[in-house]
Image (cartoon, rainbow, N blue to C red; front, side, top):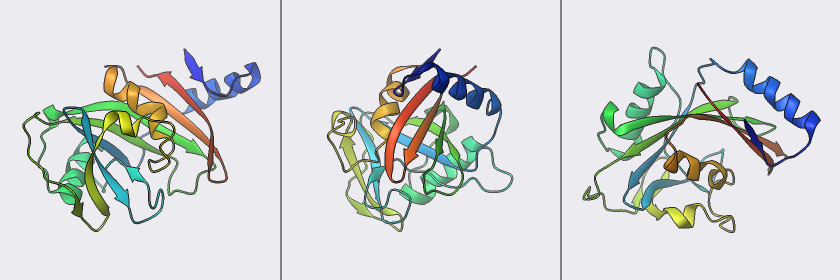
Amino acid sequence: MIISLFLGLKRDIIIENYFMKRKNIMYAYTLGFIKRKDEILLVNRIKNPWMGSWNGVGGKISEGETPLSGMIREIDEETNIKVTPNQIKDKGILTWENFDAIGNGLHIFLIEVEDSFEYITPINTDEGILAWKNISWINNFENHGIAENIPYFLPTVLEEEKRYHYHCVFKGKYLVSVTKKEMN
């Protein structure tokens, strides 16, 4: 089943074909959401894409890495937090059209730390400012400080066990549609 914010039979057929073509692609980037209680550790990015916006941590997968091992390394490099594979859930992929970013997709991960995990923020890093943000603040569609597409997929990432392919279409710098399809 495809859930689309941009309705129309012709559009849904195009989206279905798009998803079928990308079923087993490994993308070159990762995006992780580190969860502690009702908070997510985010970075206010100082570089494009999403410069000036709060986003998850992550980055480019290095040669010889899997998406999971790349995510573990990126978390360590960006936050100095050490995580193990059993703390990380593969939540699917995010792809986009007409967006000014390197590549056209990434792997999404949810990383869960203990409620008692101590990590004092804010912290200035080479990537931006790290800080814990309340999940309801992140998912608020009126929040213009968060990367625009996150409220469309983060609730599912946090609440469902299934993996999804999220696809975003942009017109210029504006998000015009987000679709979601369950992955096998």
